[in-house]
Amino acid sequence: MELEIPPSAAQLPAVRHAAERVLSGVPDEVASDVLLALGEAVGNAIRHGSEGGGRIRVAIVVENGWVEMSVKDQGPTPRPPQLPSDPPPPMALGGRGLWMILQLVDEVRLSRAGQGTLLNLRRRIGRRVP
Image (tube, rainbow, N blue to C red; front, side, top):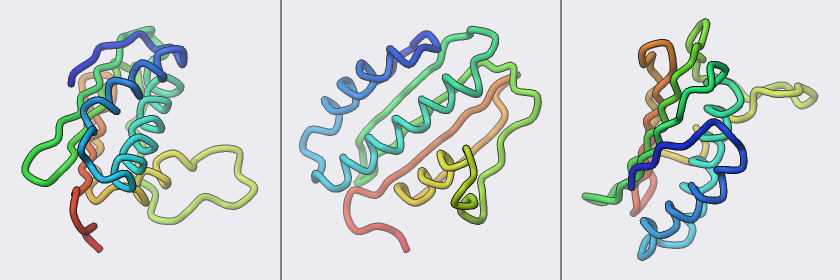
Protein backbone atom coordinates (compact mmCIF):
# COMPACT_ATOMS: atom_id res chain seq x y z
CA MET A 1 0.00 0.00 0.00
CA GLU A 2 1.24 3.44 -0.86
CA LEU A 3 -0.59 6.65 0.00
CA GLU A 4 0.18 10.29 -0.46
CA ILE A 5 -1.75 12.43 2.00
CA PRO A 6 -2.01 16.11 2.86
CA PRO A 7 -0.49 17.05 6.23
CA SER A 8 -3.71 16.87 8.22
CA ALA A 9 -4.63 14.80 11.27
CA ALA A 10 -7.96 14.18 9.55
CA GLN A 11 -6.03 11.75 7.30
CA LEU A 12 -4.99 9.45 10.15
CA PRO A 13 -8.14 7.25 10.06
CA ALA A 14 -7.73 6.67 6.30
CA VAL A 15 -4.09 5.67 6.79
CA ARG A 16 -5.08 3.29 9.59
CA HIS A 17 -7.87 1.66 7.56
CA ALA A 18 -5.59 1.17 4.55
CA ALA A 19 -2.89 -0.33 6.79
CA GLU A 20 -5.43 -2.65 8.46
CA ARG A 21 -6.28 -4.10 5.04
CA VAL A 22 -2.60 -4.78 4.34
CA LEU A 23 -2.19 -6.37 7.77
CA SER A 24 -5.06 -8.84 7.43
CA GLY A 25 -3.60 -12.23 8.25
CA VAL A 26 -0.84 -10.76 10.44
CA PRO A 27 -1.14 -11.82 14.12
CA ASP A 28 -3.18 -9.32 16.16
CA GLU A 29 -0.32 -8.41 18.53
CA VAL A 30 1.99 -7.57 15.63
CA ALA A 31 -0.73 -5.69 13.75
CA SER A 32 -1.56 -3.63 16.86
CA ASP A 33 2.08 -2.67 17.39
CA VAL A 34 2.51 -1.80 13.71
CA LEU A 35 -0.66 0.32 13.62
CA LEU A 36 0.41 2.22 16.72
CA ALA A 37 3.94 2.82 15.40
CA LEU A 38 2.67 3.85 11.98
CA GLY A 39 0.09 6.22 13.47
CA GLU A 40 2.76 7.85 15.60
CA ALA A 41 5.14 8.15 12.64
CA VAL A 42 2.48 9.75 10.42
CA GLY A 43 1.38 12.02 13.28
CA ASN A 44 4.98 13.18 13.74
CA ALA A 45 5.30 13.86 10.01
CA ILE A 46 2.11 15.94 10.14
CA ARG A 47 3.11 17.89 13.27
CA HIS A 48 6.82 18.32 12.75
CA GLY A 49 7.72 17.62 9.14
CA SER A 50 5.15 19.36 7.01
CA GLU A 51 5.37 23.00 7.95
CA GLY A 52 5.59 23.87 4.26
CA GLY A 53 2.32 22.05 3.57
CA GLY A 54 3.97 19.33 1.47
CA ARG A 55 2.27 15.99 1.13
CA ILE A 56 3.34 12.95 3.15
CA ARG A 57 4.10 9.59 1.55
CA VAL A 58 3.17 6.50 3.53
CA ALA A 59 3.93 2.93 2.49
CA ILE A 60 3.42 -0.43 4.16
CA VAL A 61 4.12 -3.89 2.81
CA VAL A 62 4.10 -7.39 4.29
CA GLU A 63 6.73 -9.70 2.80
CA ASN A 64 9.30 -12.32 3.75
CA GLY A 65 8.17 -12.45 7.39
CA TRP A 66 8.36 -8.68 7.94
CA VAL A 67 6.07 -5.69 7.97
CA GLU A 68 7.93 -2.80 6.38
CA MET A 69 6.74 0.80 6.63
CA SER A 70 8.00 4.15 5.49
CA VAL A 71 6.83 7.69 6.16
CA LYS A 72 8.36 10.56 4.21
CA ASP A 73 7.57 14.22 4.74
CA GLN A 74 8.62 17.15 2.59
CA GLY A 75 9.85 19.45 5.36
CA PRO A 76 11.23 21.94 5.64
CA THR A 77 12.94 20.40 8.63
CA PRO A 78 15.73 22.67 9.96
CA ARG A 79 17.59 19.70 11.41
CA PRO A 80 16.70 16.03 11.20
CA PRO A 81 15.29 14.49 14.36
CA GLN A 82 17.48 12.11 16.33
CA LEU A 83 16.47 8.70 17.62
CA PRO A 84 16.40 8.88 21.42
CA SER A 85 18.65 6.60 23.43
CA ASP A 86 16.64 7.10 26.63
CA PRO A 87 12.97 7.62 27.42
CA PRO A 88 11.84 11.22 27.84
CA PRO A 89 11.50 12.61 31.36
CA PRO A 90 8.10 11.76 32.91
CA MET A 91 6.92 15.37 32.97
CA ALA A 92 8.20 16.31 29.49
CA LEU A 93 5.55 17.80 27.21
CA GLY A 94 6.77 15.92 24.15
CA GLY A 95 9.44 13.62 22.84
CA ARG A 96 7.62 10.34 23.33
CA GLY A 97 6.78 9.53 19.71
CA LEU A 98 10.10 8.22 18.46
CA TRP A 99 10.79 6.53 21.80
CA MET A 100 7.47 4.68 21.57
CA ILE A 101 8.15 3.68 17.95
CA LEU A 102 11.49 2.20 19.03
CA GLN A 103 9.66 0.01 21.56
CA LEU A 104 7.15 -1.30 18.99
CA VAL A 105 9.27 -2.29 16.00
CA ASP A 106 12.51 -4.18 15.43
CA GLU A 107 14.33 -1.78 13.13
CA VAL A 108 14.20 2.01 12.74
CA ARG A 109 16.11 4.10 10.22
CA LEU A 110 15.79 7.86 10.19
CA SER A 111 17.34 9.89 7.39
CA ARG A 112 17.22 13.20 5.59
CA ALA A 113 15.05 13.23 2.45
CA GLY A 114 15.56 16.49 0.60
CA GLN A 115 14.40 19.12 3.09
CA GLY A 116 12.29 16.57 4.94
CA THR A 117 12.64 13.31 6.81
CA LEU A 118 12.30 9.65 5.85
CA LEU A 119 11.46 7.15 8.57
CA ASN A 120 11.76 3.44 7.70
CA LEU A 121 10.38 0.89 10.15
CA ARG A 122 10.48 -2.91 10.14
CA ARG A 123 8.66 -5.33 12.42
CA ARG A 124 9.24 -9.07 12.28
CA ILE A 125 5.97 -10.97 12.00
CA GLY A 126 7.28 -13.93 13.98
CA ARG A 127 9.32 -13.68 17.11
CA ARG A 128 10.67 -10.16 17.80
CA VAL A 129 14.36 -9.43 17.58
CA PRO A 130 15.70 -8.72 21.12
